[in-house]
Image 1 (cartoon, rainbow, N blue to C red):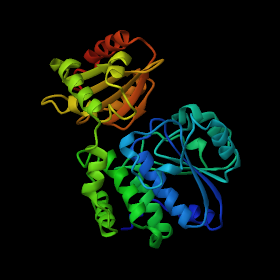
Image 2: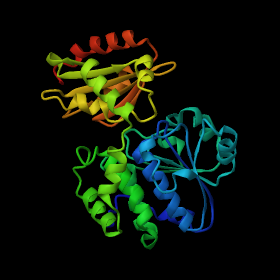
Image 3: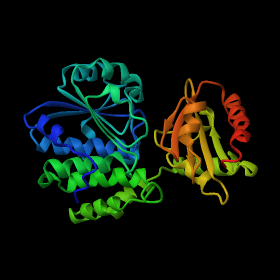
Image 4: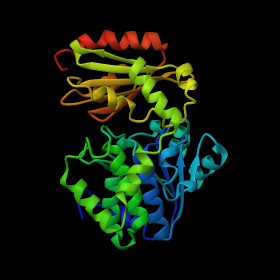
Length: 337
């Protein structure tokens, strides 16, 4: 399925000869980060390039089944090697993030790199000045979908089952198993193409959504029974979890994935948030339905951003002060909610 949202001809020309390529994705990588990166990794390897993949921090265990994940370098564990790759690569791809700052601890290395920089992303407000090539649109389910279009325009014969599994994982996870951000005909046409290539969607869904540890499931139960607060007059609900509470359930990366959506699933709720305490900050996930923009809310009040209905942010206040601030802001948005 050729979408023709972008013209990738200049990028195709750039890749006509063997290059040393570095693929990067954002801090706290999710299914679309890994899906787009690993799909591109396999495609570019088959195209004859030398390819490396870097993410700043660990990815969740429920993505550890993905083909090629063992090739991923984690910056916080291999800083020296990763810095060398930033310095020596001919082309650096930024996949599923809109600005170098989203690389967190690896952002300065990316900014200093001399290679040609290519952005492929679906978040709003891309930092176009930071890149030589920008392929960005919010009118798609995921970055993986844009990567698929790139492959279709470049060499569709190389798209195999392994690549299809990666693309499908990116689409599946960034749409919450096709429950949001997927009102596009192109998304389902691509998924049909992926099934033709032999993917097992049921198996992938189980890998992603049905391999919880006992501790993760108990954390979910605790969060919903003890830490869920509903503020009906502002159509808002939120969950907050301290470091001590996370440690009580032996928290692992990815254990709170999707938790905020439970708060949003309550009838009448239009705005939901999840506050999780980290070592030196409070990490916040925002979700909304309808016209309320959590991207704008996160950018204005919590140094964050993302999509209209799904965004993230940070607070450097205590948990109590952060929750006070959040609740204090709600009356300002009453008419929008």
